Length: 137
DNA sequence: CTCTTGACCACTC
DNA sequence: AGAGTGGCCAAGA
Image (cartoon, rainbow, N blue to C red):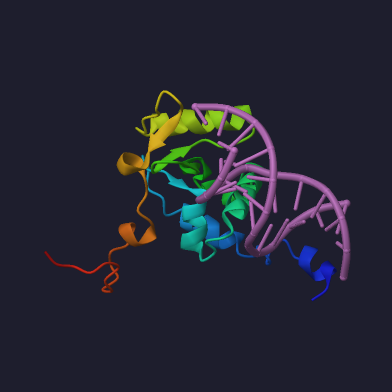
């Protein structure tokens, strides 16, 4: 397709960003996840950057106002999450909202995914009879 | 169509 | 713990 087609139709052509928004909307309150996780759940495990890129478009205001972008954090070692937002204001707001939801930040501003991490859409929608992991023992 | 830019992630020093 | 580098993929000019 041509480059013009790529830039056209911002309304009906939200691209796979919509997939990320869809996943983010599934994140329950008091819970957080990482860009890489959202990307993976969205079907693009290598597109972690675009999750943040897509989130950036949310703050502009609009139809995606119902997307809890604040629950999406960057990834930190040892299974932890951290605010990687460049905007000091946005980052402060994000943290404030998360703390209001009951999410505890570490002294370094990190969050323990073991306690507040989101297991993914499958965890919130156990309606699937399939077995994500072998049951037993 | 080509080049630049990202609210990133993982690895390495 | 902090900084630098490579990779990934798409949007904008």
